[in-house]
Length: 56
Image 1 (spheres, rainbow, N blue to C red):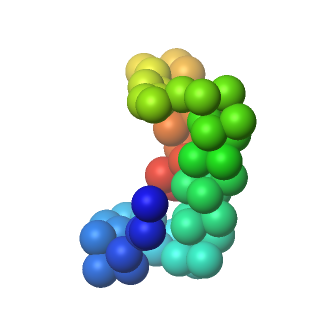
Image 2: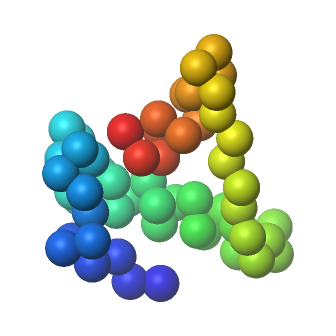
């Protein structure tokens, strides 16, 4: 999947776009390795680190 920079919200720009793309690509690579078609990332006010890492 190609990540288009124009789809990245300004909020994510707290990290470089290249870092964001790298995180998504690494996640997709691990998903492919495990043969996952979908990824659900859960967060709540007390457990936000997974979502924060992926989307900043």
